[in-house]
Length: 67
Image (cartoon, rainbow, N blue to C red; front, side):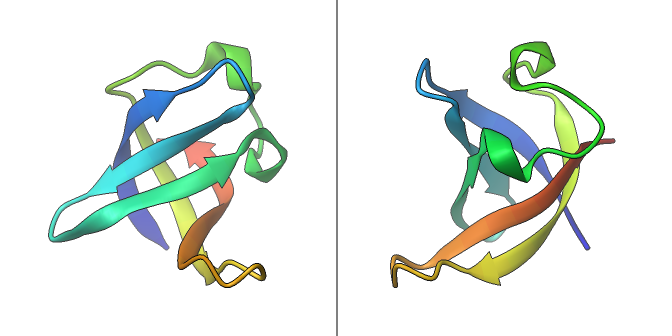
């Protein structure tokens, strides 16, 4: 399980999580657990799992939970 900070949110239900020492990780609203996309805020700390994006575009966050 990784910890990071919400860096950017879009109006298309996806965003990016920043982690120290690595590139930002993409996440979609469908990856959220126990919260809604509308309740997230830039700067908020979250816990998540990192998995390979099946489309071959690097990593993505799964099981994103507010910390």
